[in-house]
Each structure stands twice: as structure tokens, then as C-alpha cells.
Image (tube, rainbow, N blue to C red; front, side, top):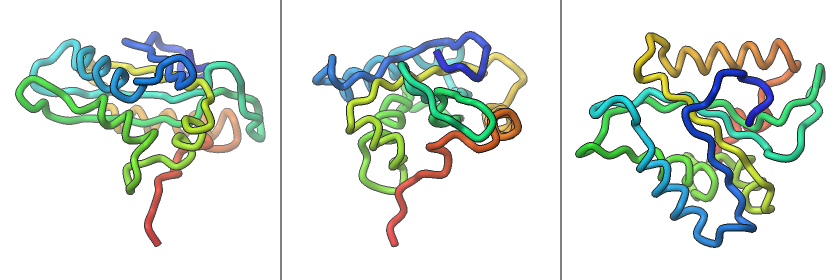
Amino acid sequence: MNDFYKKKPYKTYTIDVNNDKNLAKNLTKNINKDFPPNDKEKFNILYIYYLADQTFKYPNNSSNVLYIGNSVGELNNGKTNLGFRFKHCLDGHDSKQNICLSNYYKKAYIIGLDVFDLSKTKQRAAEEEKKLRYKFLNQYGALPIADGANYKKI
């Protein structure tokens, strides 16, 4: 579990390429099966990627958090593409790929993914993400290492 956001996640996934040769396919399948848990038309989630077995030294303290994100959207025929989104962050090859997350994934670090379902709350995932980033910045002295690390073509 991440060491920053203390709320209990709806679901936690372990991304360990060493133990799962079909990781991308299985991650996509499992996440798409699990979400959205409460609503048949929309999803509103907050998620945190983190290193499962080590921390980073930030200016004010250490943390295992890599990235804080959110996803809000409509379902397509009762299905979500969240699994594809998470998989694509790790191994995509365009502007949706997070180059920092991808490098940790490709170097076979064990990555955790905590997913928080906000669908039945009054919290909006984008607003909660912004609050958490500010809180992280104030507490650790920097944003999570993979925030703002999307691949961009020059």
C-alpha cells in the first residue's frame, strides 16, 4: 500500500513483471472486471502508483509514491477501458505513456497500484487529485517523481 494516502483503497494491484509474463493482459482484464463497482454508467476514481518495496528520498521526507492520478468517464456498453489506460501508462508509446512509470516497469521494479472509487461520494476525482498533489508537495517538498513525466514528441 502507498505510504501517503491513508484511506483504504477499493482495490490494490501488484505489477510484478518478474512473476507474470502476461502482466499487461491480466492487468487490463482484472481492472476492467473490477470497475466500476458501484455505478453502471460512470466511473470516478483516484489512483496512486508506488514502489512496493522501496522509497524515494524527497527533500523533506521519504515516500514510495510515484504518481497520483484520476480518471473520470462514461462506460461503453457497461465496460470501462481503465485497464487499458493503466497498462498504456506503463508500456504505451505515445503521449499517454508516463515515461518514468514505464522505465520502472521495464526495469522490473515491483509497482503497486491503489485505486480509490469515488463514484458514490461527493468528492470529484480531479479535485481530490489536485488536493493530494498539493498535500504531497507540502509534506515531502516535491511532487511525486513520475508526475508530469508523459512522453512528448519534439
